[in-house]
Image 1: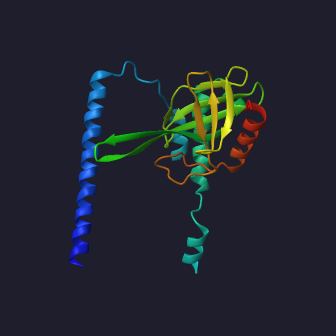
Image 2: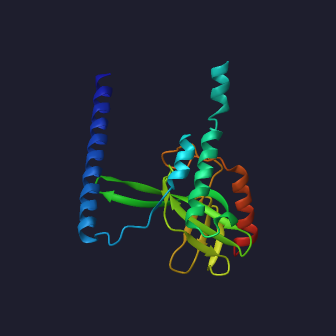
Image 3: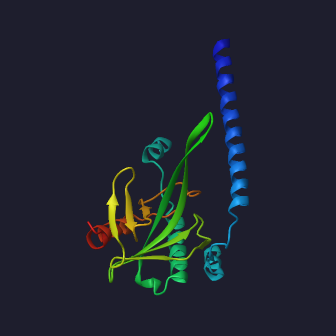
Length: 58
Length: 161
């Protein structure tokens, strides 16, 4: 039983470490992309007209 | 008995929420597409799957892009408007006219999707289902009839092969 618990703890550690490593690499890559390829112009975005939003809240 | 019958019935669609979202889709579409009322609408989405390998961690990431898809039979045209699951806004429309596209067909593998190649450089794959429960990822709308109508239009009037 103790061995089983130990294996579970090791697996949990591997999962946590894997997630931390993934988040770290993703963060570094995002920063690098931001520096190397800065966004030129924001994409055009149209918001839903307020009248339509109001109708939904009535 | 009530609990078990509910469990076996599976998830139920909130039609009030679905209808409200259908109206929002229409409002957004008509806001950005000229003569938007001439088009019938369905909700669709794109999937962008990319693989990653960060040393001992590797796998794949999927990006979902929500779309309002409009179509009309007269001068067969499909219009795609990017949006977000809560339908708070949308981007600019892209027009795919049957007379101008390179090819269009329905793909069955790896996913059931409507594929349109406007030219040789790129393509769009539109996935569509009659209802998707996860409203954090997809627009919550029930569209069984609309999807059947779009499939019929796409296969019989828009597809090139």
